[in-house]
Image 1 (cartoon, rainbow, N blue to C red):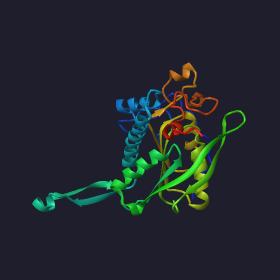
Image 2: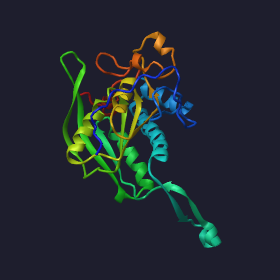
Image 3: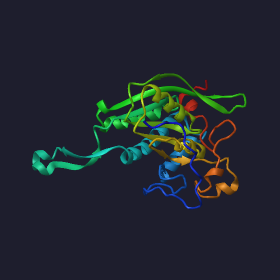
Image 4: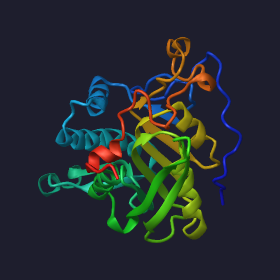
Length: 281
């Protein structure tokens, strides 16, 4: 069974970049497990949800749409596939010619979507609905963890509390999908896996879907000794020096900074969980 204790942190790469192998990915130096989608619509939608002029209705729509954009890309690349044969409506007229054959998601693959309350409520429900459209419900589940970041006396987040959960059984050997609007420190992911492994086992692989994340988040999650991939629309490193900001993404990873003194992402989008729920408690 893999352990979720961090390994030594990934080394900062040299100037040589590791491009996303897929055509719609931004070239970067964070390694092949990180996929940053690159297209004008994704960039515009991410900018929209970050803006203080974005209304609550627009924010919900943007989070749903961006999650769907990232999730469908991730699912198509990362989930197990098999060769399938499906009889279409045209079989009545054309017999065997009306049968489609090709590679698609493996209906036997066990998939668990994890909702980290409260920012993750809408993204996780979106992922669950997308999967339930094409995947047997018998092989699919939506679990919930009630977690929150807790700041110390200096205002910085020093721990993540888990005050309640609804986990529907074992996740051993399943693909675990964790969508969340913001990937800031990575502490929530580490805490979630520590909690799950105690009573529910560990997944065979992990798909993380933050809409926006930081170099610090990537450093934390990529140090985990688990098979994982990260799909994001943006890596924000706004607290870096001007010289680092002028360099390609990840080429000076060890010097990149995306978090302020209170561990909020810069430029980021503010407290998206609070804004989505219109509750600042």
